[in-house]
Length: 120
Image 1 (cartoon, rainbow, N blue to C red):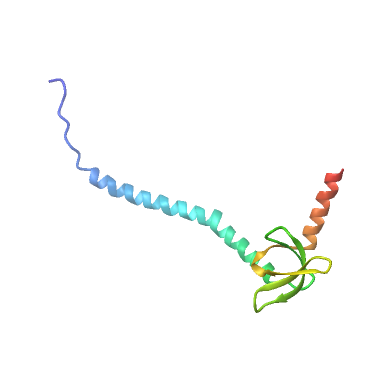
Image 2 (image 1 turned 90 degrees about the horizontal axis):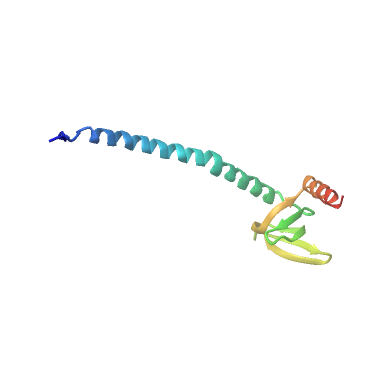
């Protein structure tokens, strides 16, 4: 008696198509943010690393994936291998892909500065 009857609304179908487009737009926006903040910078770092590894030459110092600091003695481009000296008169062969970092003079200077600051 005190409750009035409720009638079904027919606009539910129209609002669902609007929410679908907004949901797709949100997903595209999220993917764009991920691409520009995560994927693109990572691809840039990978390209820079590959360029450094491909530019290796004799006498360069490297850090391998296992953390071994070595000096490049010979480069075998056919097999993508490097011969590196890990200690005086100890030469080993490693795969080029295991090079983690190429030590430049700037990196060496930064490491020496950190060591000197830690001693003080």
